[in-house]
Amino acid sequence: MFEEGNRLKEEFGADAVFDFTLGNPDLDPPEQLLARLRELTQQAPDGLHRYMQNAGWPHVRESVASHLERRTDLPFAGNHVVMTVGAGGALNTLLKAILNPGDEVIVLSPYFVEYQFYIDNHRGVMVQVPCDDTFAPDPVALRSAVTPRTRAVLINSPNNPSGRVYSHEELERTCTALSAAANEHGSPIYLITDEPYRKITYGAECPEIPQYYKDTVVVTSSSKDLGLAGERIGYLAISPEAADADELAAACTFCNRTLGFVNAPSLFQLAVADCLDVSVDVDRYRTRRDLLHEHLVGLGFEIPAPEGAFYLFPKCPIDDDTKFVRELMEERVLVVPGSGFGTPGYFRVSYAVPSDVIERSLPAWSRVAARYPQLAAT
Ligand code: PLP
Image 1 (cartoon, rainbow, N blue to C red):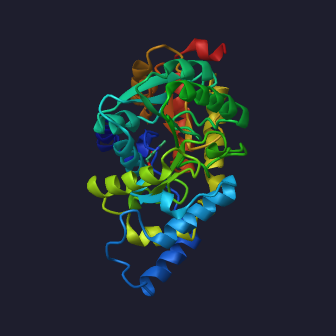
Image 2: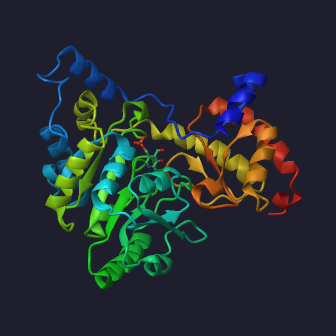
Image 3: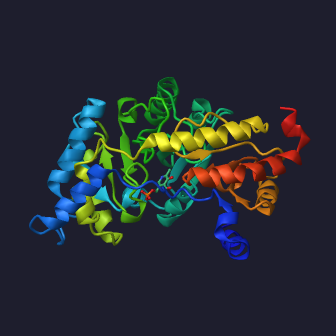
């Protein structure tokens, strides 16, 4: 898709191609973050540019722990927080720490495409459990997917690619099913909650997962909510109630080092520690979502509730999502087939693009939709 998109841009000019493929946030970081960066570079604290503890600056980890304690009412501790190279770095660090070769990690489809590679990196086996028709977790399917090799379940809400935010009731049912399975299992099953889009929601409440399941590890980053994807800063935080929390924190610290990350970027650890409650202007994403969502629904596309993140995940009018994506490409609209997210028959549209790109793309969407009378009938 990427190559083909570049070819089209060369042939027709970048303005004539509507590229909705990448989840690369285009909103600038908030002023509070930029001001803190200016301050840190003009009056640099001692040792700013040196190595520090592999888990990160102690006071930064304490700030993250206090932030999580306020949110969850659970006594998170600084020594159970590891600052990481984005959420991707956090997931790799954690999977390296917990997986033996052949151990299984359950993911709910649709899922973030990189999960497969991250799990492979550490010789784990990814087990897909499809969500229900509304893209909520299916507790019965989850429970029956647990085997003696299950080491972790990886969930992501707000979800990439579906935009779904799991509700209180859905999480309660899911975590009850997982706890029951874990009790029979005999050893802990970690619930990894990957939540880089937590602050990007449009009215839906995003429940705190450590309140539902004790063996939880929170993974996140500032890539999306502070618009810092290129700076590679994030963290993992082990619930104070999790099994072997001290040992797991030590293992993650070791793996953060030996995977070659060594430590998360120093300057950005310090900058984000003062912006844990701050985010980009989410209303700008909401405006784009509404514009595109309204147009596509008006054309007859079925789109499950996009309550968070910056993606729509419409159903294709035909079963073959790759074929449909190619037809969109003929109109120079670039999107990603749902098969890449473990969910054929759908496609992902990222609206982390300027509003004028969305506006200019609307006639192209209409032209493609006009080829499918079944859309007009829905
Ligand atoms: N998890 C999900 C669900 C994502 O969508 C992404 C990035 O798109 C990541 C993790 C990786 O984020 P980061 O840039 O912080 O590594």
